[in-house]
Length: 151
Image (cartoon, rainbow, N blue to C red):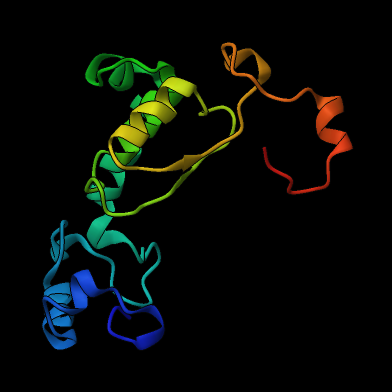
């Protein structure tokens, strides 16, 4: 998977061979096998070995959604949407040329400015109310221009 030319992921492929990766993956288990259902048994779950990790991730996302983790744990406070973006991005290394795309519910000028400073170029849709005096063309002026025009 990480070693094929079309989808090569150098952060893994350059550090470890595929056989070593497969061996580690074979032993990666967060739940004991003693309670696992056997193939053919009713209730067999494909994700059993990582269920505890998935449950924890789900819990964390629910906490973020409620705003409890986001509002208390992240500075600067960018509102629930901005803090969710920062929380999800906290695992990404800075200045690695990631480009961040998000919908208008998450788009805020303050968030976009902070991400730019951290080395994360981003694209999102801003509502007029969020522009805070930015000098942009009116809708009528933009309609007169050719599609893709700048300046």
